[in-house]
Image 1 (spheres, rainbow, N blue to C red):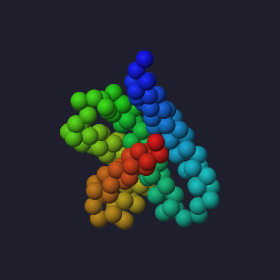
Image 2: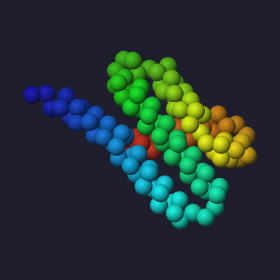
Image 3: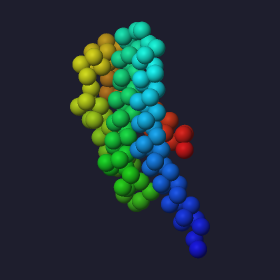
Image 4: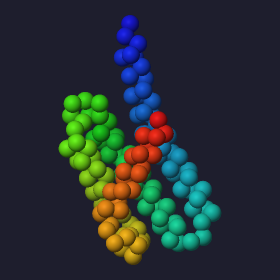
Length: 128
């Protein structure tokens, strides 16, 4: 029996569960708890933005990355495509409040959003 193969399968299953179920659930619960304790509108908008970034990364993982990660198709070009997919998800689903908040607080909105995407991805990787 190839224990290494079984181990790889179990790790893949655990990663999928963490990324597709646990992180979104924790994100919603944390957002709800923090929102109930935050009085500042700017902090609420920042939290909504973080939730949107987390949703974007999770969506991209489920619809694109999961199928090719760990294969020869997972190239630098594919990773850039995943980053752009998350970015486009955020731009498409961004509320007016978040858009105004970003315009007011970030001189380079695209760079800021992509940095936040990378931060969420790093957090997910670190949680494994």
